[in-house]
Length: 245
Image (cartoon, rainbow, N blue to C red; front, side, top):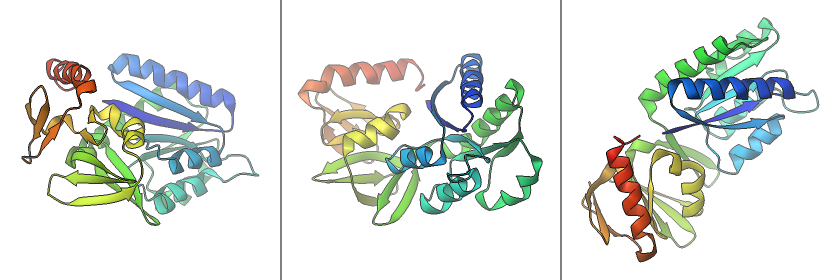
């Protein structure tokens, strides 16, 4: 599993510092981090609007005066993008903001100057919380954003200009979008298998693996495209031997 992290701070030095701390923590705990650094709240919001989903966000409160503040960005993450799962860690030079943050349900509030220990503690807290949610997948239907737990997805199916999400409880959701984009931006890091141009399946829900097809835990049999059989076979057995990441 890869932890997707965003760092948003208009001070370039602090953004680089946090990115460096995260690299050290990643090596220490042997969990891969994929880190994006933003220098404006608008940049972070553009990334979220494009379909990127983060597990953990370090968000500066005192962003540039001509741009959205960190508190406003945090409210957008919760209310506009509808993301109630991502862990938000606010950072600031001043303690005075702490009482303004409750509505956005932050994981933590760190006072600058930042240290390795502060960032490590925030990451550890996130990983404990993430153990309950095990990652999430986000999509938009109309003007509403939805998030579901990755472990509850059996597979995704391309249907024309739409993607169908098939869940373990038998329910389905349809949203406008591309299957490849959903896989590349959100699901590749969770070990999903792009077995066909029309199907991306959750490794954890593969019951039977055959040369030309997979049978899933809900009984659905899906074909593996001829061009991808070697790649999928290697990915499947690598995950099997590795104890599923």
